[in-house]
Length: 154
Image (tube, rainbow, N blue to C red; front, side, top):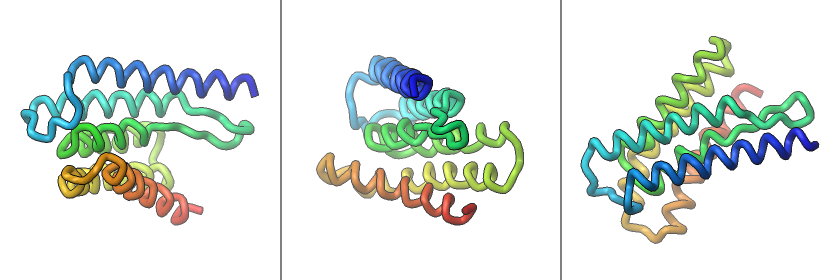
């Protein structure tokens, strides 16, 4: 139990630290009109954060791994939109392939690339909506793909 608490604290520390560092690069939230180079940098930062979080998974009962690599992708889509979640999703998905080439791992790679692609289109569609609606659409579209991947491989 204590090990799980330590792993959760490590994941939260990584997430909060990266959110802080990325916020220092970007002075404002929701710069949908920001230059492409700014969105590329934010996508790279979010992707690197997701990869780091993937390496610090939380083990539950020594047989089940939990990681929160979806959180930087959702944050990138909510905060920056456009190409940012696409870059982060592709980076996280492709980095997962370095753990082997089994069907579940390929499915996870495909799922994260698909989440990034879906967020590319969804973020432009919901950018004029209220914050809670944007977050609900972004999170729902992401989690549905993860659940479908889980059901396919179960």
